[in-house]
Length: 354
Image (tube, rainbow, N blue to C red; front, top):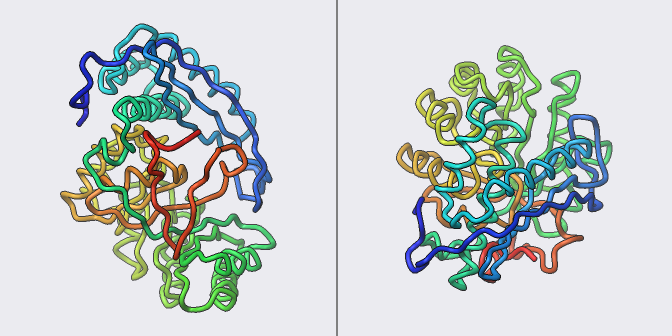
């Protein structure tokens, strides 16, 4: 699975990689590091081949100021790949060797993931298959949760999401006082009813002792999970929180590849894990990490990029929840659709992005 897919002989040849920075508007403001934003900072990636097949993907840039550096990195890395065979493992090997002394994290790791995803999209298109089928899986719907930022409208937004058909909603908390966290959760529960699942996300905001205090305060609120209560790279600290609270702990969106996944699984750092395709290593990195999760029997959910995550969850033995958002709806020709609280991957060849 990691090398050249069967039936591609000879492989495609990379002609060019291009990138475009865009800021599409959001229907709901989302909480970022610098506050709530009304747009989604995205870098669109196209990998063109000599054979006329173009693979596409995108990266979420977190902040507008990161878009141009990311786009430039995409084009710089793409220039290294011109004339290379379109074989994901060989592409990764070439890029890793070039950036060995910088490290495969941060913008470097994200851009490498974006190129990997575009490469797999091109491979699937070249054999006229949805990505999930190329990976040996059957495309199927997954229960989807809708993510909301920590804004003044969060209760009203949660109510609107439930009315739109979402059967699960995730909200960001971490207010100055734990009582505000509990009050917010209860207010949202009152607005969405008992039939809609609820998750919360602390975005690594708490110390380990504070995370334990707050998680215990939320233990009777019927939450599906508490996400990233403390620093994502504090494996032992998260393991302690997991041991000392009843509500399941969710980690993984900020792991860089299978090695960090293995370390967290070995320490039982969380009850559930989630992968971010643009940090875990694209399609190739996700498959490696998902195999580790399957061996450990740990449920895997997705973080952002629902278009590709839906395909990858189909190839994940312990698939759990799909995170859905509308960040790309204004720029893609056909967006994924929610039906009966579930979202299925596109059936078009490749990822289904246009």
